Image (cartoon, rainbow, N blue to C red; front, side, top):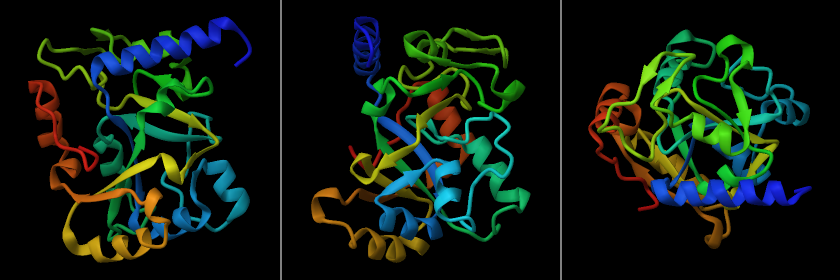
Amino acid sequence: MNSSKDKLTVSEIRQEVERRGIRGLCHFTPVESLSGIIQDQRVWSRSELLRRRPNALVNDQSRVDGHTEYVCCSVQYPNLYLLDRFRYRGHINSNSAWAVLIFKRDLLADPKTRFCSVNAAKDYGAHIGDGLEGFLSMFASWVPPSDRIRPVTHLETCPTDRQAEVLVHHSVSIEAIVGVVLESNESLRAVRREVKKLPRRTRPAIMVVPEFFNKYQLTGRVWRGEETPLPTD
């Protein structure tokens, strides 16, 4: 941080995160990619991952938002609209099982973290912002780029547009991964085997929560003001 203004912004974001009761960030990845994440002790940004492993799997082949040096996340719950596009578009094996990684909420207050009230790819990244203003834009009563209006019952923890994004610079350390959410028990054994490679103090919680992968059910709960349990609860 370079100034007292930066420190104030960090403090204000932390206070707002606490007030809203936000518990974490979500980042989805194919289960088969977990071994690399655990080996590297980090979730790398796309540009850094491909620099280290040119043949690595990447979720988004295009990244028209232009922020390839950032890790894409969402607040509280995963962006299932985007995940569904990835699942059925065929650029990653359509039979792949997916995991949602839960990151510590502290990343929201990192000075290098950026925010977007809609999908970051909209208008080629034109709506990505910084600081408290960027953070608060995700929770506006009306989000002009997508014309989303926030219902009065909308969960305080969740952005108005379900595709709002948080962009974390460069990488996320293994210590910041506090949970792994799976859709079914099919990949549970494989995930447990990978997680056991970590020191006990850094092992994330593992939970099977099918609702995390059903966009209609999850979105309905958000609109009604109902939380869905996280593995860190």
